[in-house]
Image (cartoon, rainbow, N blue to C red; front, side, top):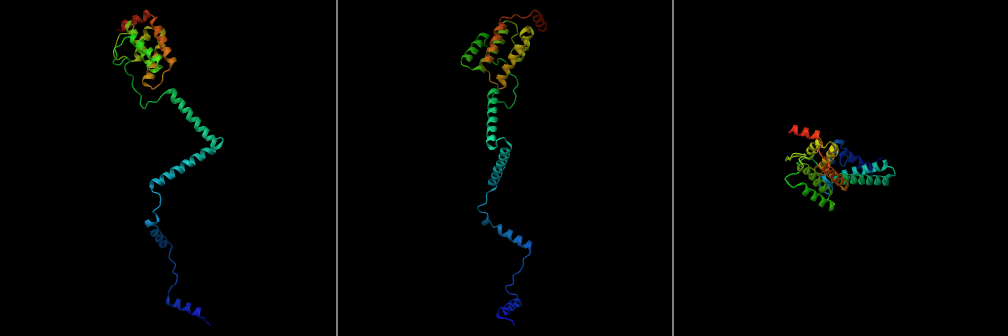
Length: 229
């Protein structure tokens, strides 16, 4: 015997009213995607830049986490290591000077100046008293070469570089050839290479200048120089 509830169920089944219908998966997924594409669901989503920054900082965090795990002492050891590397970099920067982006070709030793050896020596001494060692080294090298020209050890020649002057003077003063080459290299380093001179560098160059003043050209070298001229 069928009760009132059973009768109602039979009636609904026969009429097809309010019967739940199963929707296939693909249309359902597409319907959900269409619904979620409504801008109202994405008003507070991060923009492209914010998402990129979030991924970048996540990568940085993972990188430091991995480095901290590998470094002795964990995070504290990593901090100490970073500080040590930073200190070493600063020390090298101070010692070697600011690196140049491009190498510069050697320029003339005197440029447009026409001062004599005494004037260059006076300028070098003034720079040395002010602890401007780079300028002092430059002026002392110019004084050294100008003095050799004044003594006719070198022919006065505009456009001569420090390396050329050292090579030519070394041929007539062979006892000081190595020191002359070293002086020219120091001049190039502080003038074109961004190196910083110091007091010891200047004193070495001043001593060479004084020694050259007391040295006479060797006869054989002088003869070879005259033949070359």
